[in-house]
Each structure stands twice: as structure tokens, then as C-alpha cells.
Length: 308
Image (cartoon, rainbow, N blue to C red; front, side, top):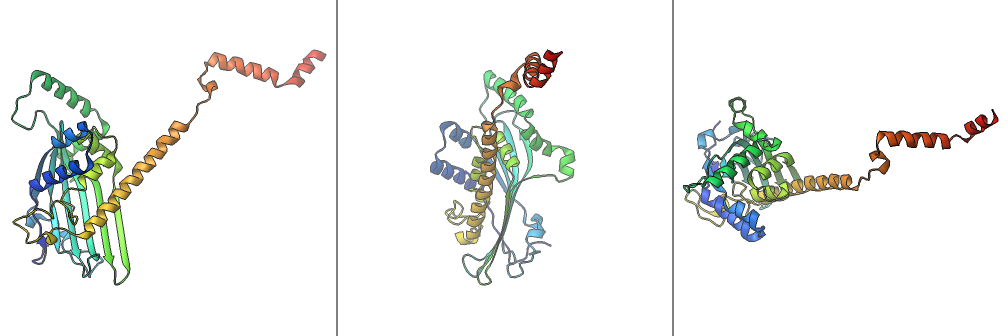
């Protein structure tokens, strides 16, 4: 079932994504190395054709009969880092309710493919030393267990099975009149760590890459870069943004933060472990200590021997 005539398909441009990255850098002020990596990203956004938009998220096939989907953003974003290019499919479907807080929203980001960049994306020729560094870096990254999983998505077998790696998904429903609220969110810490290693390796936490990607206009937050930019496909900023997206973003960040806190807690437990010095002694010393302790711990046996 194709989108209905009442469904607004919002088209985005690649410039909006560059603006979002620039605003993120200006606001968060990352360290020089992290900033350089972000500034070197090459972005390419492609809107999904109206006829190919996933009908299941447009046709209103859900339990929220009072909120049929009326707005859709869907497309693929290719992010080219220094050595790896990753393609992410993004889709967001929402309907604003009678009140500003009401409505429903469904959002999902899937990593669909990845590849190594054998040469620089621009027209500048690489020197011999740069080519040597690139070759070594690609060789090292190809052995990374995380990155190898997204590179495998580009194989014919994975493509035929439509296998993807879900980075984040959110489902929000608000109805203030009926006092109904439902929020379901999930962020994959494993996929986030994979993207961090592939695209933004200078950062220390997968939470950073999640925070960066959630500011992109594919999640139509109110007062975002998309809202402040004019587009020929929309009549006003209100048609391509929603306050529900702001709620979804906060909940997704909360989920990512919880994962990070749990990981830090596990690392702290490992750091707090104390290994007994006896455990590091050699087998011979251990046997000698065992004999001494055995002899010293049996005074009755010594007495019996003395009587004899």
C-alpha cells in the first residue's frame, strides 16, 4: 500500500546534514583531533522514492487508530570517514495530535552497508607516505571484529537476506486527554561502538557517536537545523519537525547513557579486583608452602610420632 494522499513526504538535502554537523561542533567544541575527523566527513543523503517508502510504517498498521501517520522522512545517508564509508538507512514517521504534546512517532536507524575507502574522496593526489599509511590502517581495521561485521553487510549473501544492524529505534505515543503515554526505545551499544571505531575513532565512548547522529535532521526535532532552513519541498518548518522527536531523542540518549554507565560499572568492578600474591607463586613454591602448612597444622600427628 503506497502512502496516502494525506501523507506528507518531507525531502531533505545533504546541506542540512552538513549544517547539523557544523552546529554540533560549534556547540560541543570537541578536541582538535575529534573536530578534524568530523570536519573531514563526506556526507551524501538520498531521499527514498515515494513509491518505495515502507508501507508498513505509513499505512497506520498499529493500535493507535486515532493517530494515522501523516508525515514521513526516509532515506539513506552515506558517511565517509578517513578510512571507512558507512551507509545508514533512516526513517521517521509521525503524526502530531490536537495538542502540541500529543501524537505518535516511529523512528529507526539501520546500518545497511560499509566499505573501506581505498583512496581519498577528494581529487587531491595522495603522496607515497599517505598511501602507505592508508594501506596499513585499512589492513588493521579489517582485522577489527567490530568493523568486520559491518563490512560483511556488503556481501551478496547478506544483501540477498536484507540483513542490517539496527543502531537505534524509538516508538512514542502520547494522548493527554486519555492520560496515555507509551515510550519504547533501544540503542545498540555494540553497533554504536562499531560506528565509533569506523568513523570517529578519536572519541572514547560510543555515546559520542550516538549523540552526534541524533542531531541529524532525519530525526525532525523542533528548533533543529532542519527547522531553521528553508526547503522547496515544505511550506513551513512545522511540517518537517515535531516535538515528539525531541522526546524520542532524549529517551534514546538516556538509553545510551544507561548502557555506558553499566559498562563503566563493570570496568570498575574489574579494577577493584585484588589478586592474592599466593596465586602468582610458582608450582614448586606452592607445594613447599603446602607441606609446611600441612605439617604445622597437625600437632597431634607430630605428638604421635614423638611417642613412637
